[in-house]
Image (tube, rainbow, N blue to C red; front, side, top):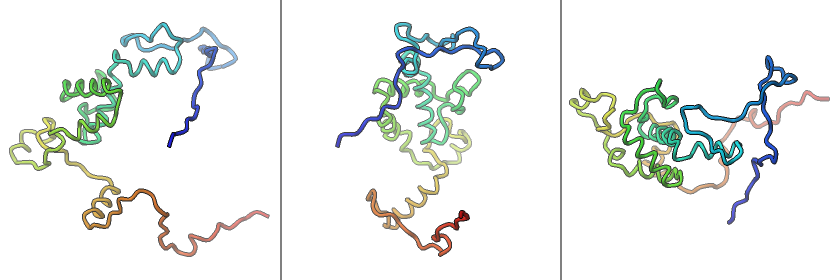
Length: 201
């Protein structure tokens, strides 16, 4: 079936002006402020009015691969426990350098060249020989690379409680793979199902 669309944002015909306010008082506007980006990055496109849509397009532009690198790093962190950059909140000069900069750039380029398809990126990582390695660790490897910076073994980290439950049900043959169905109503004490007391008149 065809999906429905919902208008979430509509561009104004006349852009709203923003001013610096004297001591934060909105009754005392001073010079006008226009949208911009840090000077060390490439400029916003000048042929369009500086709107949120213009900024969003600037973020995902091929001249600005920082967003793609950040996305790739976060997804890598979800699968391996630690990103290619150990400081996912800071990919700049104050953050940690990437352990595999060529891999980070290649994955970011793959993401952009495939129309920012997250499915493509997930498939690329999950089908890689790096991800499919066993997590066993020899004494020699533990001594040479205790934190697995060289990715010589598979990731090993704690799983969430929901995943533990699903693993236990799958191994025991009790996991129901069907999506949906009626709600489950476990037995509850009587005081939990009574309507709340009203203190009104």
